[in-house]
Image 1 (cartoon, rainbow, N blue to C red):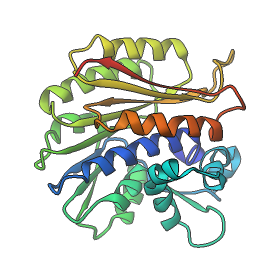
Image 2 (image 1 turned 90 degrees about the vertical axis):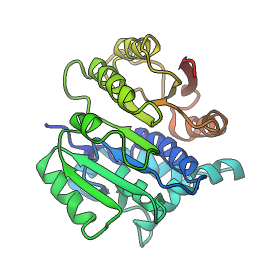
Image 3 (image 1 turned 45 degrees about the horizontal axis):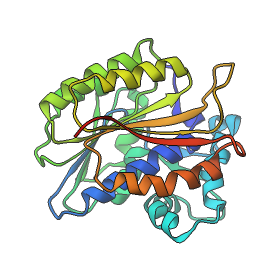
Image 4 (image 1 turned 60 degrees about the vertical axis):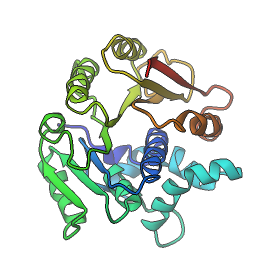
Length: 282
């Protein structure tokens, strides 16, 4: 387990992933009934952008750093408000010193009746996460392999909610394993929303990944992508993607408004692109 998200927190991929995540959570809040968010690879919850790791790469400057400085139209500002407000709450002075990971971000958005289950395998990260949520009865932190959670914790008692799957992609065959695990989870809880983040680095692997979902027995699968540039000759992170199962009906309209703006803010000038594609029928 050598991947450390502290080097990448707040980068363009985090911004896009978290923009989508917040829109899904906001949709779930349209009904009074409670829901649960299960974060299978939760990380440490809050990242110090002045740390040695974050300063070494400086990736956040091309992500959340650009976003907070951008001029947004009224529609885009409204769609990004949950994310930007959560970031604002973590910072109490000029500039950005901290960036919330997905469990911390989700916790900012929950109502009193909603719950968060944050799962993290790395012992030190799980311990830090438990410190952050100590005494918070709406958030439960479990030190566990996130893939096991897709069996043991589904369906949640609320019968409504979201499973966020955001693995580090450090092991061989991660793309294929994701599809296999999501298919099993879907059979246990076909009514849940699943959001699966993936990096666009090896473009052949991404193509096969999308094909596997398209050929799966999972209904209502959409794919959202934002790429900074055309495919690189050398391996580097060219873009970021999110597979969503049982996506909110408003998500297409929201992404069609949001993604072109994010491409302009985050992408290499004139070379960025985005896509919202359906892989399987409802």
